[in-house]
Each structure stands twice: as structure tokens, then as C-alpha cells.
Length: 500
Image (cartoon, rainbow, N blue to C red):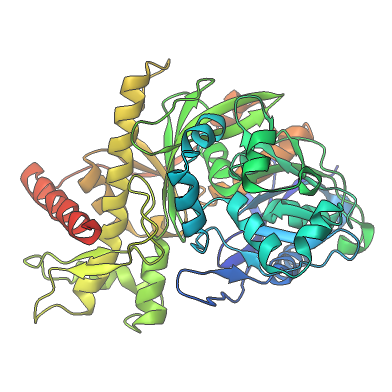
């Protein structure tokens, strides 16, 4: 009986594959990093073929590790870095430009112009998003306008657009399926999250031909099958969700009011608001948490562009660390008398500030500041940014009158949550419990669950939620006075960075 589930987790710095059993235990996993390209200040690109190459290699690696063939795998689930934009030739399957990554800020001027022309209210009303370079729509337009002949080819129907899930799906199926799910579509600036369809007004505003767009499906749906030569036999593809939505599913945040935060390259907190699309008064995003059986569940989302990337900067940019795991011990050794703040706005500030023009800065340096203080400042910057998001979410949730009650517990996942120091500091600065699950690969687990749910070998969401298991709860221990002093210092650092 083919009961194994293969999760593809295509991220910003690496591609991963994880094989799960239906009881959610992990059979095998593999990971490969790929190059990052920074052709100009604030620009971030990936070679689309690198995303495919590393995805294919890791999938084959886990199958070999586990001694499984295609016949042993019931379904594949895909989760991906969202907003990253690929445009490719429908005939050759070749990308016409490097993928423009979600972190990329090259379309900031276009977004500013569209805002100045008064278009943001329409965009926010239809999509739940704001006009920001973060999202895919303006990236598509940039590619069409900067690759010779691309716009004319797109108008003739020769080019396809996709977020990374669509690109991988196209490659896996040999170009037979051009589709995406509702959560990825909701991040393009082109999708009406209330009607569940591509929006003609937005397509016209951003000058994107409808013929480029993928079909939009539920998160658990029939996405076709892999070409037999890819894995030695055809495998059904049954689930797709953007990485943060997949983590929401993997964390079993199915009830309105539940909240999770994922700490990878960036940090993303999602608050389940149920069937109500709560429109933020604090510049948070209204988005689709998941769509099952044609029914959309919504969420408020706060996006932080730099979380784990701050630690990578210490390692790769400054050479302070040999590996990221050293950050915990070094941060613990920091001088508590120093108040050093890192505002990691390397590619601008995300929610709730949404300022693409500012750049990172350190505040409070003294002659005695060194690697330990830098590490502490980097880890604390993630906690401070999370505190900003949670405060904004609480305000929006309370104002909305939406049914349900926000759970005063934060469920966390991602690479950074392995650090007990970072999670304890997060709990301290939030003044709230932080729950770390036994299975920390919740993004991949969410993708596997969606595929398994469609294949009828995983239970309904309520029963799946019963299987969520706690590894450790971090309760706040920091004195309130200390916490308020530290948060005030953070707010002052952000204010000084963003002063005109």
C-alpha cells in the first residue's frame, strides 16, 4: 500500500525534500543550498533552474535514503517561497530571466507611483495587500518591460508566469499542468481574495496579460502526476500551499484566533480569522490561510523580511560566526549592561512599517561592543519585530469583532526555534507563552498533510489537529520593567532609522 508522502519545501536559500509516514513521522530528509544573486542594491535573484535542480536532487536523495520507489509514494505536496516570480517560455520551458525573489525591491518606484495615483485602496480592497515590491505583480511587469520582446511574446500567449510552486509543478509534469493554489495566488496583487478569481482591473493596472496566469485550485487538489522519467514512475501531486500557509496547516492552526510564527530567512506570523477577511488598520496583510473544498479561511499576516538572514549576515558578511549554531552561546555571553540594537532593514522594513527605502543600522554601540553583543542584537531584533506584529494583530483582531478569541500562545517553527535562548527571549519580550512543537518541520508537514488529505490517507483537519504535540513551552520570566525598557529602546531605534 503506497502510504508515504513526499513534501517538497522549496525555500529562499535552499531546497528540501522530506518523506513522511501518515502518522507524521519523518522517514528521510535532504537539503541543498543554491546561489543567491544580488545584481544591484536591494535586488535579489535566483536562477530558476537552480530551484528545479536542487528540488529534483533532494527528492531523489530521500527516496534513495529510504529505499523507496515511486510506487511507494502516495502523493507529493509542494510548499514554496512565496511571491518569488518566474516567467518562462511555454514551448521550451526555459525561464526568460532569473527569478525575482520576494525580498527584491527593484519595483519600489513603480509602487510609489501607483500609490501617488491613488490606486492602493482598490488593490487593498481586492487583494488584502498593499502596494509594495514584495509581491509578484510588479515583478512580472518588470520582467516583461526589461527582457527584449517579452511583452509582445506575453501578449501572444507564448509566456507563462508562476510563483515557484507553479514553476516546479510545470517541470514535474513535463509542462502538462500550469496551476497554483489560492494561497500563492493571493500573494500576486492580481487575485481577488473575496471572489477567488484573477481580477481584470488589477491585471489592467499592472499590465499583466491574463494568458500568462496559472489555474487556481484548492490547497488539496488534483495537480496532475509527475512524468515517469522524473522519479522512475508517475506520482500524484495532491497539495500546494505557500510556505507560511503550509506552516499554519502543519501547526494545526485551524481555529479562529490561533496564531503561528515561522522563523526562516524572514519571519511570518499568521493569525487565523476564520471565514472573515479582517482588513487591517495597522498595515498588516489580509490573506488566505488555506482553501479546502472550495471554502476559503482567511488570516491576518505580518511579514518580517530579515530574521534568520540576520544571523547569516553575522556568519557570511561579518565573519563573526563559523556557523549559525554558534550564535546562541555567543549571545548568552553578551554584556547585559549594553543596549545594542540591530534594525535589520537590509532590504527595507516589512510590517507594520512597510518602508522599502530604509536600510539596516546598529544603535547603541560602545567601545566594548563586540561579537557577543552583535549576536544578541541580531537575535533580539527578531523578537522585537515579532512583538510589533503581535501588537498590531491584537489591535486589529479586537477591533474587527470577528468570531473567536485569539489564543494568547504563539506556536513557532522554522530553523531559529532550535535555539532555546532565542525562544526564551521571544517569550520574555512578548510577555506570552511560546510553544515549540515536537515536529519542527511544520512547513513541509503542512504540504504533506494537504497531499495526504487529498489522497484520503490523512484525516480531516480537526482530527489532524489532535495529533499536534508540544515539545517545550517557554513562559516569560523577564521583569516587566526590563521588558518595557528594552522595547522602548527598540521603538526609538526604528523611529530614528525612519526619520525623514
